[in-house]
Length: 129
Image 1 (cartoon, rainbow, N blue to C red):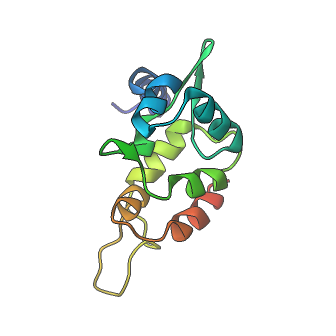
Image 2 (cartoon, rainbow, N blue to C red):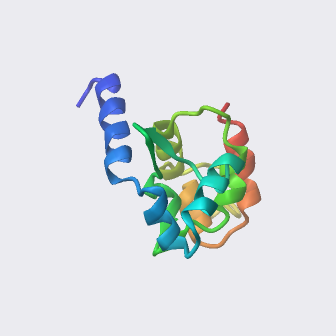
């Protein structure tokens, strides 16, 4: 597919379609859906408004739990940033996420999954604005 606009629309639709509801997210994280809504207000989870409900993109979850350090990173994302931008950014290796000269750059998502410091990813998130 060569049309970036169409690709963006399709990616957005996919994020909504595969996104978890507040209730599904609450069950996954072992909290109430009220706590999920509170975290959305605190900007420590990311959601897409779909009609009258929220859909939480699955990129912020892994292995039946929240991506390690995600709350810290999500809070630093620019207000109103496109979830498509976030999804793409999370998956692309970043030269700032490599330790030592011989280590290959990691994507922000892989960096967090490896249990590395979310501070480095949070700084990169701030720069997305």
